[in-house]
Length: 161
Figure (cartoon, rainbow, N blue to C red):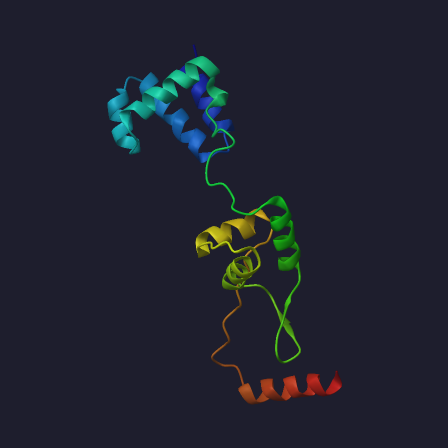
């Protein structure tokens, strides 16, 4: 069996928020709270706390991590994910001869047209993040910006190139 200090050390070493929640539940029960009270405080079902306690006793404190193979399964094959990563690495050409980066809506449309799979914005952002891309947002234009000088600068750059 484990002590409260063992549980506290495990909480400090844990990086997974779900594992920390489970360990905190065990700590509260170990300190005298009832599993029903802990379940109510953590907004989980009473049987869930009992299941965590049993799992910790049988498998140990460090096996309270989320088990692999659970969660939402991808509708894309590994080849399709590779193709999506390749596509997201390339900029999108625009009508004026320049190019721009991908937006979430572009990725959703690409996946729908290319693979026939529809994703929500939040799920697509998660997929993009898992592929190693970060979300970049444009800075807003300054209200003090002189549009005439900006247009002159753009015209000069287009003339030189």
